[in-house]
Amino acid sequence: MWEPSVAWVTVGATSLIFLAALTSLALTTVMPVVSASLDGDALYALAFSGTLATGVIGMVAAGAWSDRSGPVLPLYTAVALFTAGLAIDAVAPTMELLVLGRLITGLGSGAQVVALYVVVARVYAPALHGRVMAAFSAAWVVPSLVGPFLAGLVTEHLHWRWVFAGLAALTVVAIAMIAPRLRGLHGGEGEHDPGVGRRLLFAVVVAAAALALGLTGELAESVAPAAGWATAAAALAVIGVAILPLLPRRTLRIGRGLPSVILMRGLIAGSLFGAEVYVPYLLIDRFGFSPAWAGLGLTAAAIAWALSSHVSGRHGDRIGNTRIAVIGVALLLIATAACAITVVLSLPPVVPILLWSCAGFGMGLMYPRLTVLTLAYSTNADQGFNSSALQISDSVGASATIAVMGLAFTALHGTGAGFPVVFAIASLLAVLALAPGLRMGHAHELK
Image (cartoon, rainbow, N blue to C red; front, side, top):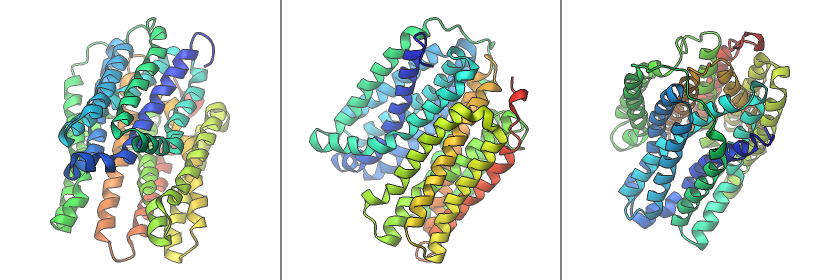
């Protein structure tokens, strides 16, 4: 992956992943300041949830386009949208325009990751896919170590607008690194797919339902708990039906091979990212930690994730898919269960802080491997579709779980059961992930 012919692709592609993750983390840091500056409290949540929702549409569009014409134009378009959204945010005079920029950034971000996966499949030999995906995985994690601090520094000493402007400029530099090597990539082998328009429509439906699901906690608090739960049930039902054309057949039935890979990704994403929201909250609410110290557990998990991604990338074939699934799920379960038990048994805070790193190590083992398996099960004609399915499962699994946890936490507020319940939900999803994890297939079965 560092040979002269592909070295700049490695640097540029990894930089694009890094900047996408950094953008998400920077937004978390600067949004309170942005909201106060633009008087945008009413649209605060939409700036986050809207980006995830439009990302699903971008994933489907980029997948179909890459299968038909190759990944070059989809990647350029995705980066253009991503950069344009950041540029709009950098100059936005109102919160409404800033949210519009966030929606455009979401389209580009979702499409960009899918197109990059197809680039990896076309540029690198299969034996290198594991190492490249390990680098991508680390690039998602490293921003959590430096992103919030850098964004806060820029906001404090310059202006929050420079955070968005700087990210846009760096994205242009990153795509310039990769552009020369993309010229030789041939198009896809897929023919015109008459079902693309239908899948895009379903993607819009999934995005809208996910957006509605994200608002159920506020609905339960401001209107009535029953209204929140009813809306959540309806939104989940819509997602369950509308997402089917966006995933490989038999995904929800735990079909052997690729369907199980896709399903496992969604379940572990829901478990990890759902619980991760409440780890700092637990340390602040129950143990009186400051926000800075409350992030200690997440930092340890991020470091563990980066380390285990390296292990997975270099030794994944030797360890084996089933063993990676079992070890990864076990570590994730240990971490989520430890958080629940800490509350129930009044254990010291060192327990969740230390054991949460197990979650990071487990995810670092599983995440790159699932992406490698997705590409291995794909041909040039369906690399885009399968890559988008993997990202959709990840995004929808995480956002749906976070919404349901938020609704449950709000409903149980004041009872003392909120934290145990949300961590129990995360533990349940980890256990459920083992079923598809045992049906992912083995190396000799891959195409």
